[in-house]
Image 1 (cartoon, helix red, strand yellow):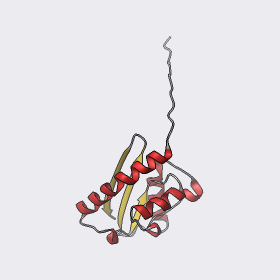
Image 2 (tube, one colour):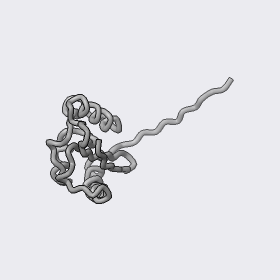
Image 3 (tube, helix red, strand yellow):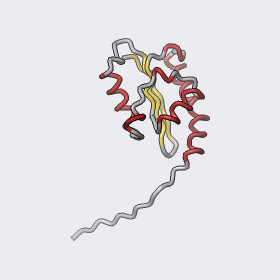
Length: 123
């Protein structure tokens, strides 16, 4: 007879410090990604970004100099989807006809632990 023992802990997210850390880190990630792709911010057609909540996304877009109108924002009605937000946003953009051939997309994600990443891709 084999038993399984689970010892679970919990974490407490401190939103304000995480938000400040993201705003310090993400500009370098975005700039490096755009430089590697030889793109400017104006070259981006669609921004697919992790969405903890609608208000934070609005504030972050201003600080990061990213056009909010280029971002699908299902977080307004779906809430925080965590890492799934990128996939959901890509799916919604496709369904809305926003992923036509030649579309330049900036994917941007960050998460607990603090990890972040970005990719520039052309559909």
